[in-house]
Amino acid sequence: MDYSPFFLTFQLAITVTVILLVIGLPLAYWISFSKNKFKVVVETLVSMPLVLPPTVIGFYLLIVFSPQHFLGHFLESVWGVRVVFSFTGLVIGSVLFSLPFMVNPIKAALQNFPSGLMEASWVLGKSSFETFFRVILPNVKPALLTGMVMAFAHTVGEFGVVLMIGGNIPGQTRVASIAIYNEVEALNYDTAGFYALVLVGISFCILLAFYYLNRKTPNLY
Amino acid sequence: MHTPQGLQWLDVDLAIGKGENVSVFGESGAGKTTLLRMLAGLTRPDEGQICVDGEIWFDSRRKINLPVQKRRVGFISQENSLFPNMTVRQNLEYAGTGSNVDEWLGLMGLKGLASQRPDKLSGGQKQRVALIRALVHEPRILLMDEPLSDLDVTARLGVQDEIVKAYRKTGLATILVSHDLSEVFKLSQKVFILEQGRVIKSGKPQDVFVNADVSGKFKFSGQIVEIHKDGVLNILTLAIGNQIAKVVASDEEITGLGVGSRVIVASKAFNPLILKV
Image (cartoon, rainbow over all chains, first blue to last red; front, side):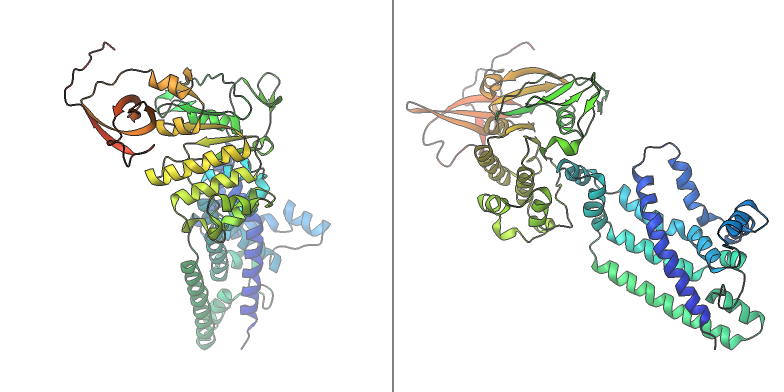
């Protein structure tokens, strides 16, 4: 039995969650508090993966990063990085595809955050930066946790984007969902069934832990 | 200024002396809160000047606008603004060096609650903590935006006493926004009456309110704002709605009553005055 699809899947999901946390927090903050008129455009773009078929995103990424096109050619000739059919490609595709799952819960929490608390902190001489880390962030923890779990789980479960941009290379881009498809195509129902069962079990445990933790954390905002 | 009635000018010229405790009184929508927010640096005035202790905080002509963080004001609002993720002590230490935190907690009878989170406190306790938090920041002026309006009468009187204690201990200049008359009498030496964005009257609370219109109601309920003994009689000053009335009472009638007590006043033989408005 080849366990590499699972390792790959979780390596991908953890990488994507960490990257999304770093990108998603400032992005959600900007969307929540900026008065920029193009904010609504950014908001729409962030939520696009919710309505688009994953294959559409995968298709565009494949085109943009292919060595025949400018960006793909540039990356390969300058840094020697090939995005298509590589783990890097999986990460980029998954980050884009799971972006709304991280940004939207945090955005909702920030928009509901009482302005009086932020103002109280400013009046006490604290900068917006310090206010964000010491007052806002600790009070939106449940939303942060929701975003992380959703992004993680969504990355574990995705298929279309990773297939388009990553292909099906064992040990490199063959994640669990693709491995299942692969085994079914080869009529190895036992292996496919095992992979599927493991995914069901792990997903159940992650969500169970999440709901349990969220039940114990007081939901402030 | 945006009000429920649409855009409205807020045009105010106030001068407040060092250590003076003043209040701004008026209906909701008169611009009281906006005024305080402008002083604190939370709302930007269109034009004008704000000057504290010779330092210019805002000057539209010279394009000076000192950020809220640098103004060092104490600000207590009506809603609870304690940080829910911090204990009482952490809330206070967030504001200042923490050197006199214990002294203040003791003075306001909150020592036992230092390690509690705000959601475990009563409304009155929360506002006391908010008051201490504003004070340990060592502000140059204390701004209070209807800090007691969400409290019941007992809690309100308690916190009023703590505010008076704070006045005595710090000698701070304070501006209180309120539409509660007894509060204005107890917590300020000078009152500005704001109506539709303008100050229409100012002076000592007694002069501004007590010499106001005579109330000709047959029966009304109100709150005692002052008890003054005059020979064998007592003169009660009562707040009724937005008006002040003086009545005479015997020693017997006022037993058990004090400033802040709610009473019903009825006149048996009445001869109402009819005044054209």
